[in-house]
Length: 192
Image (cartoon, rainbow, N blue to C red; front, top):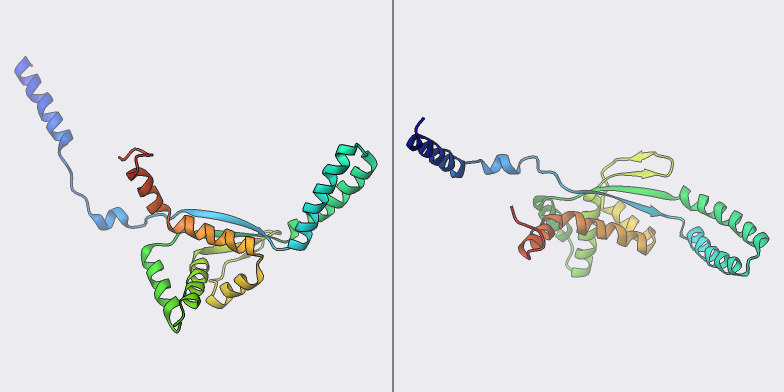
C-alpha cells in the first residue's frame, strides 16, 4: 500500500468515526432506572431519648473515673439500646418518574380547596408511592401499596424527625436527575 492509499484509508476511518449515528428516543429512555434509598427509623422515641440522656450521664461518670457506676450505666444503656433496636423500621424507597409525580399532584388536588390540605396530601402520596416495602427489626416485610390514609397515619404517628427523613428521601430520589443536570450545567462535573 502506498502513502496515498494509507492517507486515504486513515481519512475514511476518521470520517467514519466522526459520523453521527441515529438512535430511537423511546428505546433510550425505556426501562430507565430510578435511584433507590433505604431510610432507617426507630419508633420508640421514649427509649431513644432515655438512651441519649443516659449516654450524657455516662460521659460525666467517665470523667470522674467511677468504674462501678459507669459499668452499671453501661448495662442500662445496652438494655435501652436493645429496646430501641426492636422498634427499627427500614423504608426501602425508589424515585418516581414525572408521569407519577403529575398523577400524584392531580390526585392530591381532588377534593382539596385549601393549599395546605393539598400540599399535605401531595407529600403523603409522594411518600406512599415511593415506598417499595418496609422491613421491621426481625426482617419481616410489608410490601403492600401504602394508601393515602395510611401515609397520613404515618404523618400523625411517626416522630417528626422520622417523618422528615422520609420527606428528605423523596426529595432526593425524585429530584436526583434534576440535581445531576444542575451540577453538570454548573461545571462541577464534566458533561459527556
